[in-house]
Image (cartoon, rainbow, N blue to C red; front, side, top):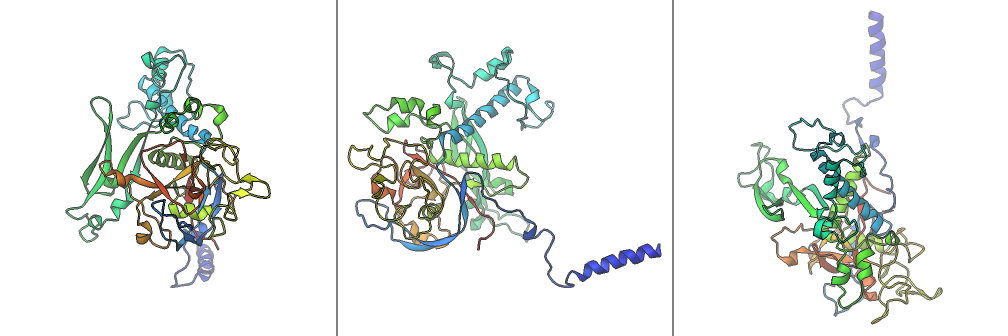
Length: 457
């Protein structure tokens, strides 16, 4: 026994000699024990840097132009190209399947759920590993699945997914409400102030089965109160091809652009800002549920991040490529998909959208494609005329999550990059314009970013 004690004491003595006594030593759970934030599939690492933000060429014809100023942006990952129809269809199909699973569970097909069917829990956990048997001949199953498609007088002869049913539901944590002075937790009283409240949107179905969104003020009693539920239809607005381009024959695009395989690699359009946000949330959940280590959320880029990434390593660049022209004079070709002159859309080999990566066969210095032309892109930044006067010079951003009852001018979001319908001015990396967060267009798409953990030398 004494011999064993001597051995243990010797081991402890040797171990303690390797650690400074009475000093702040590195803990076992320090950053050195963390994981490497590797580059996600289809993304590029945009390394931190400083650049001149803002439009370079004075042009009084276009509102919203602000003076250039020097700012710094930290490192982040960014999609190489815009989100394509194929990638967004994966989102739509996931929503379709999640609804199908619940419909099947409701008719007693409990093999599609993880929990005990007799459980009193209100939530249902889907067993995704159990594939849906779409051809199951059981009448209850077929009736349940048929609700996902148009039927009755809405059925026009071909089996079509009912876009109105593609509702995505998710929760967000309202950090903007957490930081308000009135909502600061009192550690002395171990409670929130008497008058603390959160102003959030709530959504529900009324008696007519219509979704209703309104803003409520909720008394703040715990951290759960900062959550709010989002529920929205995520199917792209295909009618935007005919609604936005009036007195023009665009019916084929309206019917086929999102669903036809020939448009698989084209950038998704007809997606508003709120739908793009929902896609980012779904993409984050999809990754985190299949990996042990959770990552920073996928999100829309800030205006500063987008512009910094577009300019590549030439932080004073006008376009995402070298020089101040939109034509490669050596190859005698256009460098982007845009409108050259009134009525002329084809000199750049495109009419409307083109498949991603069609132009700039060699990407910009950051490895990104189509940062000018083809489709313009949503950012997370709220659009106000004097943004640069109030934002910081490090990671500048003015983000406002507009509530349902906010005035319409508070729902404007910055759009960057220009599109197939725009003149060269809007292709400049520093040019900014806007669109309302609930509005979709046939010339606006988006790409995602993800913050980089740590620092890069």
